[in-house]
Amino acid sequence: MINSSEYVQRRISLAKSINKPCLIILDSAPVLKVNDEALNKYRPDSDLLYFTGFSEPNSCFVALVNLVDPINQIKEVKDNPKPEQSTTISCRMFVQSKDQVDEQWHGPREGINGTLLKYQMDSVFDINELYDLLKEWILDHRNQTIYFSSQNENSPAYQVIQDLYDIILTPDKNFFSPKKIMHQLRCQKSQTEINLIRRACEISSQAHLKLINMAKDGMKEYQLEGAFIGDVMSHGCSGLAYPCTIGSGINGTIIHYNHNKGTLREGELVVVDAGGEYQSYAADISRTWPVNGKFNDQQRLLYQIVFETQQECLKMVKPGALFENIQQKAVEIISRGLIEIGLLKGDFDEIIRQDASEPFYMHGIGHWIGIDVHDCPEFHIFNKPFLPGYCLTIEPGVYISPHAKLNSFVDLTTFNKLIGIAVRLEDTVVVTEDGMEVLGTLPKEITFFEKKI
Ligand SMILES: [Mn+2]
Image (cartoon, rainbow, N blue to C red; front, side, top):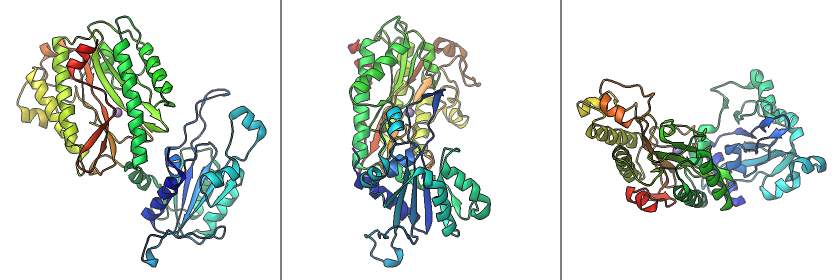
């Protein structure tokens, strides 16, 4: 559990990283419908959740940074010795008021008083007051910078911004998205966050193990999906962190396969990319194994390439490392492997220069992970040296798809022998002071799968 003082600390960090007079407005995510009156399970906006812990719809967070605040006594952020560099922040929240009828239909609300106490805000208002109050605050500070983030075009905050945009807001001058700054902060996880991701990975590892043990010829992919969901939820997850891939045989060659309607067949490999969400934090783990517990020669060759690639890439994860170098390493090991098994023919350097392995390994080696499975998208992975506390995935794969766009380096005879085989191995890791730790414990050695089944 993340306690309220950690949320307060996150807001202070946000104010300090901006450290100029501004308003920060973080809007809630829209409520999405399945259809008619049937609503999807509500997914809060990840940034709003990170900085407030508040997870109800129809809400909005507004912070005044380094501005005179007539509503609240200004609290100075104390730990700066130089007064001219001190930062002040006033935190205001707009929420749905308590409402007996609506709560009977949709569940309890924190209400104004509940939010004030539990979320340590300086003031809390009804969401219906947002349009007038926010407009007034922006006009009061019309020369200051506005940081605004919303994914909800129907929200009152969005309406205010739209109405004032032409009057006082100028892009690149006083109107910005805070996402770059927020995602940089979100990328480095606290110990509490790391523990939640670790728990998500431990629960997910156990659920993967269950699938490995239950799979057999004739079973449907969705039966494994259902077993995975049931298992992670029975161990405390709220559900999946993302729709899972359970791809048997040729379905495994489809990178984002999630129809999960196929049938497991003896002699085939099954790619399982699945992770639970535990207290709003994601796990992302992939394993590939033979339905009948025995790799055939072709499957074994490809598996060994991906296994070795993942081992080498994991070794590179430490403070200062870069995704781009790890990706480069992955391309090199996979290319060398594909040359050794005869799928690619030609000079190694030329194969690297021409990116000839791309038809078979076409995605990135990993991504940040946290509240979202693809976490902090505005903190682009390119060129960001790892720091302790960064959580990320390492997920090489080789896919011999019948749809692969072949190049002149591909040997057709070998290609035809391997067609339909896919292998992906993925783990969630945290960067530590001197290296990394794989979160969750799920074996991946060939001998493990062959003994297990
Ligand atoms: Mn992933």
